[in-house]
Length: 168
Ligand SMILES: Cc1cc2nc3c(=O)[nH]c(=O)nc-3n(C[C@H](O)[C@H](O)[C@H](O)COP(=O)(O)O)c2cc1C
Image 1: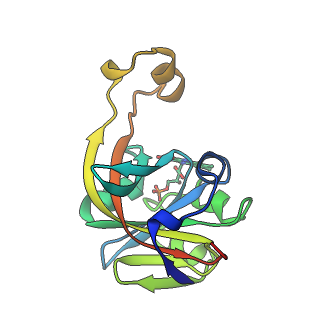
Image 2: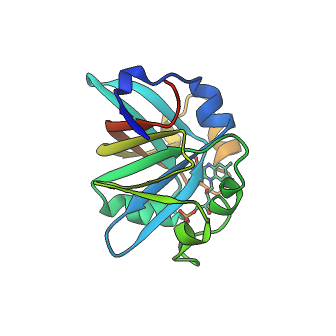
């Protein structure tokens, strides 16, 4: 695992984020957690490299994200079996999700990633907002994606460190 500059990240963002998925890792000291996610963006905002995630209020991840200064994004290879477990079991019921996932934990200064991750982004939370029904310009989007009105929270993180396990 080697440190790389965010501007040197080489990947196909729509495929890597939305089709292959990623993990959101949270750590508040006495408790940690990780969950599978597919909604996110990578880019530049306010002159900072950023990664944005969308987390529904019911997620245990949301509870820990609200208590953390940082979150860590780990990209496992496409089709990795841990995505299913971490995307169906909640930390509300299973407090040892990280251990039970059988992934190999790599501790970091601000959280943790996994040996299996080909790319890791350490993100410092810089902006949090709620997705709001009234702000959609196409009503089909909220009705399709939020039939229970459980609108996501948007967490924008500044990418402060990036690690790659690949040639890039
Ligand atoms: C492929 C996949 C993608 C997902 N993407 C998201 C997402 O972007 N945002 C979200 O809130 N939940 C998403 N989920 C659901 C959470 O991963 C799932 O509810 C998980 O159990 C939450 O874990 P937690 O309660 O421990 O945080 C996704 C699940 C899967 C299987």
